[in-house]
Length: 364
Picture 1 (cartoon, one colour):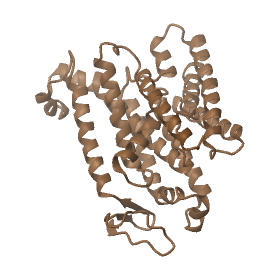
Picture 2 (cartoon, helix red, strand yellow; picture 1 turned 60 degrees about the vertical axis):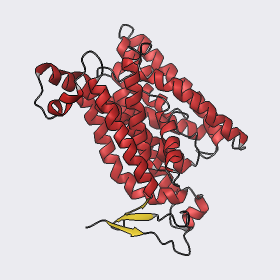
Picture 3 (cartoon, rainbow, N blue to C red; picture 1 turned 180 degrees about the vertical axis):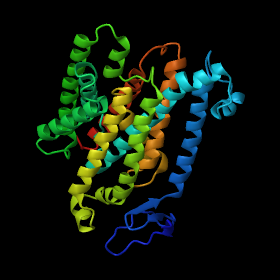
């Protein structure tokens, strides 16, 4: 089956969301996939990928044990010296792969969640999804080691956190103000559970403490990279199938149902995918904060395109986390700190900006 790229001509029943003369096209793959393609989004994605490659090269080459840039292609091809191969295979390669995969998963999860809830503040961070996944992962790893897999524990914790938030608001996931208040409460309880478990079970394991409380990319392996990239690879086809319905759902439930968007089932599918992606990210790197919140917002503002911009959000998330980890590794004040503390500091400022903006608009 050959994919087709055709000029988008909305029907009478479909609102034309593209500006006149924008040349918006739709990528079609059979009957299941129909994605709007914006020239500016493609350009932004290409530029972001170039930046991501540059950040990856810097991660592998900077520092005392860094691989010289001129040697990188040779080492990546498998013909490097023993020391260079050790650095790539054991020290920096897995860490870089986990950072990029985790960032992409969180960016995609945030884009899905914000789109179907039509709430720029409704990310997995703000409603306690990440904290719940962290608590579940901590319990699985420290209380039930070998009995419950860490990814399954993270998934269970994230699902439970989402259920508590949706129940506590009384209106599901639709009211931004209630969502934030309930999410803060759930996140606080989840952090308390994580701290209690770590304090009781792992008092002398500082690296474990960092991973399950703040998020860390230290001591990662190719197994961790395989977990996160495997989940991303499984999630992408499912996201493509519902991408058109997600874009329609941003117009509101009634109009989405009238256009065949099936608002409730699409929201359930998108939130479920968001939970799985967040849980996978937490299971390999801990609850890294605010990447899922900021990546979709940066994607929307850089592309200027309607819709969730999920592909660009995933690339932005990967770039943000790789840059944050690069700063942690080479900054004088960041040496040895978990990357989650760095993203938390930056994300807190951004969250404050979003809260003020939404308050001025009367959404809170």
